[in-house]
Every structure is written in C-alpha cells, then in structure tokens.
Length: 507
Image (cartoon, rainbow, N blue to C red; front, side, top):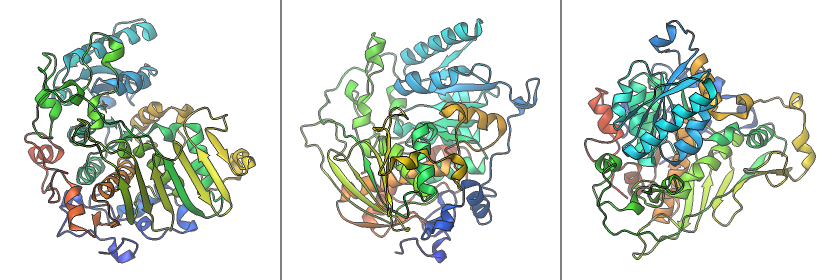
C-alpha cells in the first residue's frame, strides 16, 4: 500500500470505505513544502470542496430557525449540556456560564441523575448571581429528549470517550451546533463518520482542545509556521501515563445510574465503581478522576487523552491539520492480569510525516511540545505565558518578534477564551479555532499510535485512504457496536445511507 504521499492517492478507495467513511481529499497529504504551509485553513477548505465526498466543506451556513426570531441574529444561544461529570463541571459549563448575555444553558442530561441534578442547581445558582434572575434549567436522564427540543440551538458533549461519536452524529442530524470534548472518537472509523456527517450538515463544531485558545501555544505555532526556527525537522511530545490497579469486584449498580446506557456501544459487563465514576455524597470526591479513563473498553489511555491535546498542537505548528502521519513505529508496556485497569503503561512512539518531520511521543519526555528546526527550537507547555518554563526558545529573542513581522497568521481566539471562540462561531456562522476534521486528524494520529503500541511492529499509514499496509492493523480501525448504541447504529437508524464501518474486531 502507498504511503499517501502521491497525488494519485487522493481519491478514496470505495471498495473499502463506504460513502460516509470517505476521507476528504487533500493536497496536504502529499509532501509539504514551505509554500504549502503558507496556505491557511480557509484556502484549504476551498481547495477540498471541489472534490469532496459531500456537497461542500465550507463554513456552516445553516442557522436554526429560532435564531431568525425576535432575538435574531442569535442574540441568545440556547445550549444543552450532555454529560455532567468532572470536565463539564470544572471546564465546559463554567466556560459558557461566563457569557450569560451571549448564551444560556437551559438543559442538562446525564445517565446519572445525581450528576444531572447537581449540574442543574449549579447553573441556576450561577444565573441568579450573574443575571439577578431565575433561569429555569431542565434535567434529563436521556439526552435524546434534549435533541428533540427545537428551542435548543447547540449542545456541549462532555461524556466519556466511548460516548463522543454517537451524540455528535445525532446532534448534527438534529440541526444542533456542537462543542465536544477530546478525543473526538474512540476509533478512526467513528471519527471519519463524525467528520463527514458534521460537514454535510454544515454544523459549527468545536473540539475541547483548549490549548489552541491559549496564548503561548498560539504563539509557538505561529512562529514555527513562519519558519522562525528554519525548516522543521522533528517534534518531541511528552505525555503522562496512568497507573495500574483498580478494584474489579462486582458491585450493586447505584439506583441513580442507568448503567446499560452508560456502557453504550461497548460490551455488557458487570458494574464496579472503578469501571465508571466515583459515587459519593461528597461533591469533591464525586467529581474525582474516573476509572473509565484507565480501561481500554472506553478509551485508549493517555496516548489519546493527553495525546490529542499535544498532537493537535504539533499538527497546528506543522500546518498539517488535514492529513496525518505516513508511518508509525511504537512500543509500550501493558499491565498484567493482576491489574483491573488495562490501559498502556510506559511507551515510545515515532510518527513519520510526508514532509519529513519525525514526531516522538514518550512518557519519558517533559510534558509539552518541542519543535526543533534547522535554526533552533521552541518549547511550549501549559502554565503562565510569561514563564520560561511554559514558552521558551533556543534564542529567546524570537519569542518577542512583532506580530507585524509574521506573514502567516493563524486563528486567534477572542480573549484567549476557547468557549467564547465557539459561541461567537455559532453566532456568526463561521469556523471555530478547532473543527471536526482537524479534530479527527489529531485524534487519528493518537489512535494510529495506540494500534502501533498494541501490535508492537512498524506500520505504514495512508492518511488519504486512512488505511494501514497491514490487515490486522486495519481490523483495529473499528470496534463492533452493541445495539442499539453506537454512532453507526444511530446513523442507520436516522436514515443515512451506507454508514457501514470497516470490518473490524474489538481490540
């Protein structure tokens, strides 16, 4: 199989991928030159639209009929929160609650009624404080009821990884705009379906890759794309790992939890708290780090959990947001049978891109992203923009280059606010700083890495056809879905033609 670096590979292989699994054709899957890096996303989308598998890949143009009413154009965006756990409580709900004059959260949904009720109370208290008025927030156990509400314009999906793809597909088909936590999908087949459906429906979608809305990450990527450190040669990404352990003993399902719905498309198995999320009357513990983050049934572990953040930044800096690696060479350690949690332990991954850049991911590297070029390096991680530990360079003077001296500019979120970026994109019908295809591509690079870690041998990857040169690896691009749950089951149930996944097995 080819590596995807040749122009004649841009046409999807329809014998393998269904209509809804066709990757978007992209010249950026070929070897990237400096001139190509000068093309921004807007130009790329115009190029891609001519041969896209859907009618158009341009910016969303459909606006909810409600937004043409008294408060048009979209003076108040009505939002529903789907999933009311740790990330929703600490990040996503507060991110929207800061902007009560632009958007209102009017509904919440969670399969755990304890969580949905606490979320409802939190939102109502927030509006009482910020608006000095009561906002009625309705709580649901089934998010399908939320999607059926015509007065809701958008949804925020802050669910476990295995519950990202299905509600995104359903929300897009219901005409809702979407904010969804990373990683976009649990499998590459899911991600391709999600991207194609969202683009077909012309919905505004923001991935919860908030580092793009953080000043030092934006600055680092803009400098790299302007060639400040010369031709890019390599990228080093440091990520954490999760410990083994956990208690797998069967427990009684809490009366507040719809456990079958929580399992969703994954196999039926007994309940234990360390498989799901903490149960406690103490809110501090209730929203502690959940056990599902350490089980391959629901996630791929830190390689996609943290990896989707830093890989997204590496793609942004390289200017390869609409393609992916052409090869992966990975090794990893895995917990023994004595451990209930089974995600990867220590690991090392090497991803090769068509532009010649080698990206290394390892738990032994510092947490962050280091871009290395012919003329120097730039390091970036989380923290204060003013701290050298968060943003540094081999020549610190390059960090102070005036914006006016940079020829290539990239999307800058208003006030460095990721949720505001999404809200303004919904209101103005424009692209957010992350979109569904770039989210799929950063997630795919992580999932390719995970497959390489599982198989422990070098693999070639075609980023245009989205296939390996290895039959066993290709079977890992999809996982079977437990009916009636799953993105593909939902797509078929909603009348989409040929939403057939690649033949696969559960890893």
